[in-house]
Length: 59
Image (cartoon, rainbow, N blue to C red; front, side, top):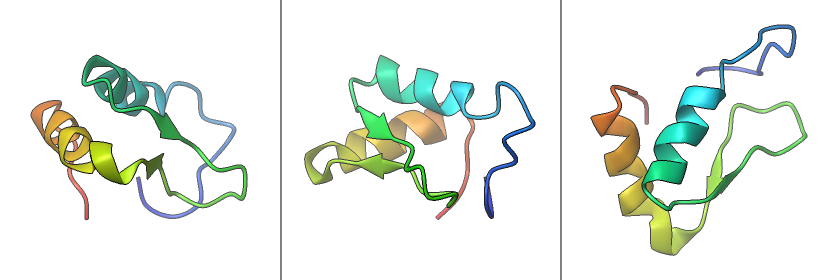
């Protein structure tokens, strides 16, 4: 996802959360309207691997 989220869309963030939950890498979607997903430093590698395995790309 790039840019601020469009909150009128439904189910856009769910696949990201599903992949992170399956990898036991909890994440937070900040309420400030950014496209950031906050993951603890200790879970970063696990989170990135899970998202890539699920077909997500990004930096």
